[in-house]
Image (cartoon, rainbow, N blue to C red; front, side):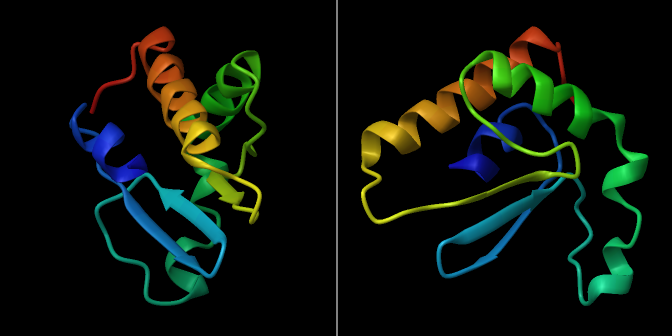
Length: 97
């Protein structure tokens, strides 16, 4: 749903994860190892801006990227809240590709 929300705005994204962990990289280049992404999040001001805007919507992320960890008590309600906060944050920042 993260990829869909960003994709609808024309924002390139690769979502990666394993188990309950996920991260969304604002790029269309598939990462193949840690060298692929070394320093990438620090060079993208969108991450910091998005982090602060998501916090204003009650969601904690990191200025190093859109990442998180799902827990077993989470339901569709929490997932919907995350995606809605992401969408509202992108709108507030007027972020388009």
